[in-house]
Length: 381
Image 1 (cartoon, rainbow, N blue to C red):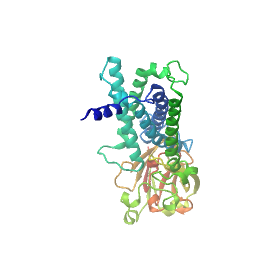
Image 2: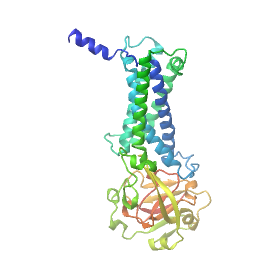
Image 3: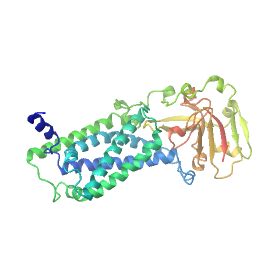
């Protein structure tokens, strides 16, 4: 390599005018806020899907739109964090190549926290983004690994903040004592950089958030899923064909309700019971959601007919032969909520096969994967 080429390569890793602590701090606090929102909303999503035993009967069924808001915010913030992470890495990357590699215990902790934070942060955002399009090019199960790495990101972020706190505090405010006063043209460049990052965050948010915030639906050009497209005006994640549901499997369908007073109902008998209408959203972990009008029999009425004691919960089994969510449990808050239905109709029409014909669960404040389709059995617990 020639001397000129060597100097050029070294210049790539030399701190520039905007690779300064103030710029890194401004971008970093935005990125840290995004990671915090993702972590907290991710906890909500995980524990609603996989509640520990002690929590199962304490999860609230209201507000009805709660999961739609938290998961939409989770996915939208995660996508917005991608340009923020790229900008943060750009502001600090020259320091990653400074020598010596380690200058003491504090510096070693700083380097280690950065390595873990960057690797885990990139992993979380990349796998989360691919989950929104339901593409899983890896051998592990997405949900438990994504959840575990979220704790790793949060721990590394806290260590990084603790180690870097003196520098963060010195450059937090525009007029903080440690803030470097840049020349006028450099200060303008910093504002342009931050303006560009803000515009990028706004652009990806505007063009994707419409998959859950339906007023922005027409602007959701980059959203993996449009809530406007799907059978009966509502998207589906898994079709009847993908679930192995055939007309033969449903030919002699009956609903079995197990409890102190068990009974069996045909579809005609279910339709002959008192029907209720509710307006509830389907909100999926991939970030899309949409409200719809559902009609059917209240779960609480089916439980009472089975002689279910007060405070009982419910196990729901699908006709679907395989799948992680073919069997689902509802805590008593959900099972006894008057908005929870065994739905038979969607937007005034009989459920299509893809939406769970002949009957499906619809309940407030629940992830879409727990709104079980093709229900064949209810069991009082």
